[in-house]
Image (cartoon, rainbow, N blue to C red; front, side, top):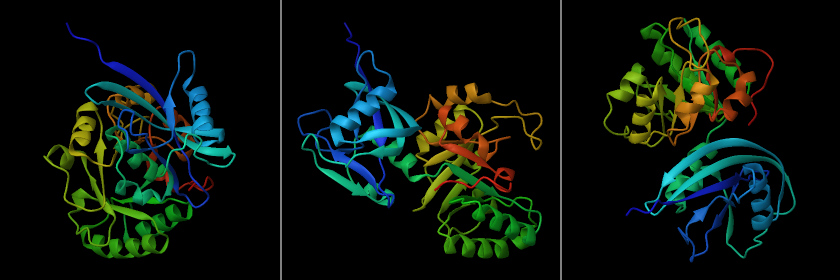
Length: 319
């Protein structure tokens, strides 16, 4: 007779200091996954909401009072002996002084160094999400001058993650445009990913963005030291991206778009249904603006991706 596995629901907080370092804690050796590092949090008790559990756990564990938090990612993982669901939140504002209330080891770690620590397997997706911003801009343009102008506008809006897509640009102008865009991104410490369909050298770039065609033609993660992202439109593509071990994906279209009028939009509910079936940071794309950020993260997305959304005047992307 089979015994059903224990299922544990956990509320987790990603706490950052003023320099952007992230707080991690070492698990006691006698507990499940003991001795490994983790993000602070704990079990959601009977009768508690996830938000209540988050506040209680962070108060009891590291001595802070959560004033504001927003969803970061939801992770489901099967350890073989136990099933866990992690509801992870970015702690936007808190009071109190961080302290080891349970005698545990604590560390403040720069986001890019998180991979140097040993975490339970369920935390790997959190590490990726914690390193990514809420916005992912996609650079296009019909001419060299337009590409540069669009890039300047996007960077001025506070974008920190950019895809060099430029599929509308004449092929002969692409290398020159890349050199100029790379220079601007380096000056402003913006991560630049190159679209795989451009067949460009990754030298100087921060990663590769796989088109959906390139994604489905891949049998393993591309051998690059930087970020690897992928474009997805359905569950099969999302699952393949997850299997390959890409760092994040974009999923489209969420709303109707003029560029793809015949594509059936997912809507926020459809987006949520798909995202609940993968452990992967995913940006919502298609017919969205920066104003849709809150709707996107509450639907389970990492944030918003787009082209024209980042060419609008006004709203500045938060860090």
